[in-house]
Each structure stands twice: as structure tokens, then as C-alpha cells.
Image (cartoon, rainbow, N blue to C red):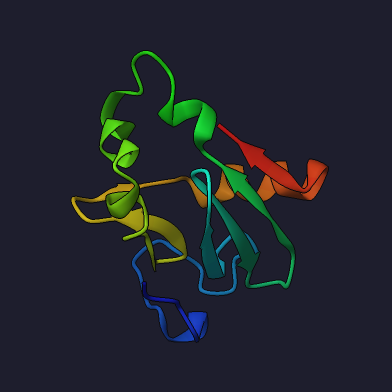
Length: 104
């Protein structure tokens, strides 16, 4: 699992390196969840179990494989999996700011 250690070095086109919603670090937890920390220091929980166990999780169906789920890494401040599957960090940030959790 990769972790972004210095978001200021990320020169992604159209992405402000200091945007508070960029994820600095993450830890994969049990039950399809993560703990995350954003570049501004805010921390929270991301729970994808509801999404993954839906009848039709769409492109996220590949995440049912727990070994694949654990391959998550940070790319351009977002939680990402091989095959360009990722989560919107700005929506995650807003939810965690309000409730401490991001539940899908």
C-alpha cells in the first residue's frame, strides 16, 4: 500500500496541492473501511461496506474481493485502486468534516 508523504510535490494539473480535501495518509481496516487523514490534519473513517454489499455495486463490485480492496493506495490525494477506480476525496472530506465518517 502506498501513502502520499508530501502533497506539495504533487503537481497534478487542475489540483491545488494544498487543497484541504486531499488525503495525506490512509490505513485499510477490516470490513471494507479505512481510516484517513487529510492534508489539513483532519481525520475520519471511510466505510464502503454498504456500497460493496449492495445488490448492484456497479464498478465497485471488484472491491468485494478483500485482497483487491487492500490494494488501495493514494494517488493525487484520492483513494485509488488498480484500474483507475477511485473515490471523490472532496465529498469524503465534507462528510467527515460534518460527521467524522464517510459512509457509502
